Image (cartoon, rainbow, N blue to C red; front, side, top):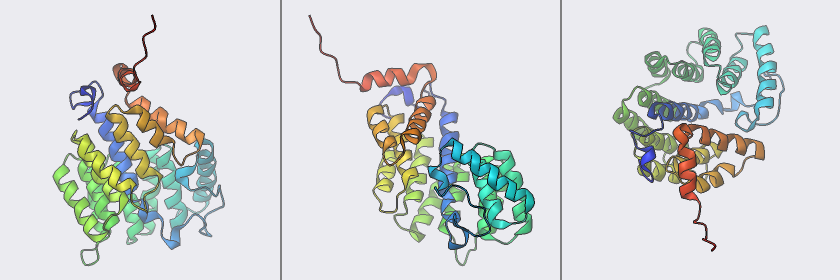
Length: 281
């Protein structure tokens, strides 16, 4: 890794913790497109009304309220596809991966041939640590005669978590052939290089992804992560604070700091990032 030896593969920062965080980001982005079809929007009639804000833009209180409301609807109608998908998504965003997996199991049983359901089920399996099962589920969702780039990207994210980086990158590149310049794929490809310790290459892909017209806030937050991992904290915080509310930006910056805080790594690099103070006699 670049910019500072603190972030080399043998650094004081746990490479496995960075890898785990990066993979969860990849999985979230890999299948996010599968959750934006016309049939499954926030305003779907079968889903009870909650906050009008997209899930990605909700703060902790809004997510908790959405979880409560959607959870109540799920209890009443556990076979409802749209409610189940949204409930599992919210549970995953709040770290309840085992519960999200249980919900998706029920949704998949009720909708065994639904590609979007299978993709979300595979994501839930991977987030819960069932990686080989996730590959099988995503594979069942894919159709060779009309492959879905989102599923290719999701499969790449799981392969990355299994340590099969070359296979993962092949999936991402295949996905890019189907969907050129798709920012979520390029961001996942960048994260793949984060896992192997090549932050310069990772940043190249991240910046390219962030410059695409379709790039969303998550892509730019991933760029902030990669920049922060290289010790350029002022720049990382500037990127992290764009487009977000003050509370959301503070949460993102806090997360960046927490990932880099072991053995005072943040403090050491933050000091390096400050301009030199003038000496006054």
